[in-house]
View 1 (tube, rainbow, N blue to C red):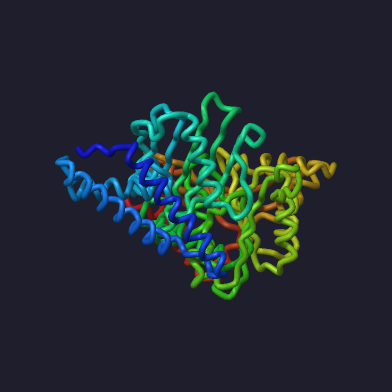
View 2 (view 1 turned 90 degrees about the vertical axis):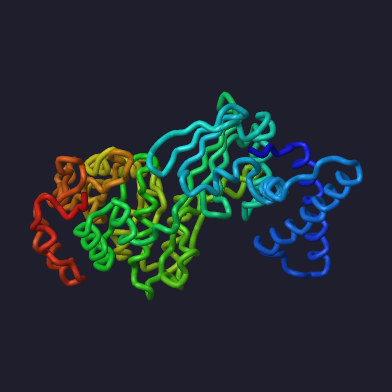
Length: 438
C-alpha cells in the first residue's frame, strides 16, 4: 500500500492555496466572475502537476527514487482534498458505501455504511486543533454568510458542496466532534425508493396520489431513518407548475438539483446571530416569510420547535399539500409531540384548541423505521378528528408481522374517493400482506 507523505501534502497545499488566492484576487480586481468549483479544481490540479514535475526533477538530480504514477495521483488527490475538500475525510465522503461519518478529535473515526454496519477507521487528523481548523476552513468556503466556530459559537451546521450535512461541536464536547450525514440524491423518486425496499408498490401509489391530491403530511421516524430522503421523493411528485418554498436549518432537500421538476421554487435557511448578537433568522421567522412568498406548498425540512404553529396555520389556511419531517418513535406519538412544539410558541392555547388545529391541518402521518438494516415505511395514519385532549386517527397502513406496512383500517370514503380521483387504485388495499417483494 502506498504511504502518502503528509508533510509533503501540507507543503504543496500551501503553495496551491497561495496560487488560488492570487488568482481570486486578480479576477476580483479585474471585475471578472469567480471560477466555478469545477474550473477552480482544474486550475488547482494544474498547479499540483507543476509542483510534482519539479519534485520529480529534484529527485532525479539527487539520485532519489521518484514517485510512481499511482503515488503521484494519490498525492495530488490528497492535496486537492486538503485545499478544496475535507482533507483526509474526503475519501470517506466520496465512498458510495458510507452514509454517515463520525469524527471525535484525533481519535478513531467511525462510519456507518449504507447497509447499517458501523466500521472504525484510522484518525483523519493528527490533532484536535487540526480538526477545528479544518471545520473553520470548510465553513468559510461553504457558507453564504458568516459562520463562526469558536468558544463563543461552539456548534456549526452547514451543507457541504455535495449536499451532505456537516454538524460540528467544540468546547461543549469532551473533544471537537464532527458528524457528516451524506444524502443520496440519486434516490429522488418514489419508484427508486420502492426498488430499494423503503416502500412497496401499494405504498408508492398511495403516497403519489396523496401528493397529487394535496394532502398535508408529516414524515416521522428516528435519526437516520430516511425521513429527508422520502420527503425529497414526495416533493418530486409535485406537479411541475406548482410553486414550492422550503424551510430548513441547513439545505438538505436539494430542490436546486431538480430544477427541471421544480422550475418555480425558493429555498430558505435559518442562520444564527453574528458576532454582535444580531441578524439571527429563526425557523419561525422563515415560516412567516414563506407565507408571504405566494407558495402553493410550504415544506419544512424538520419541525422541532415553535415553528410548528405557523406551519400548521399555513396548512389549515389553504396551503394544502404542505409537508414536514420530525423525530418520533411511532406514527401515534407525532400528535403529542406536535402539540408540545406548538406550546413552545407561548400562545397560551388550551390543549383542545391545539388538537383541533392539528386535526384541521394534517391529513396523513407516515412513519419510517430501520428494520434489519433496511429503511422501511411501517405505518401511515389518517387524521380524522379531535376529541378534546385526543387526536382521532386511523392506522390505514399498519406494521405487518415483519414490521413492514400493510393495509390496515379502511380509509374514510371521502378520502378514498379523493385519492381515486388522483389516480389511486383501491385494489392496492385489498391485499392484507401488502405488495412487498421479499
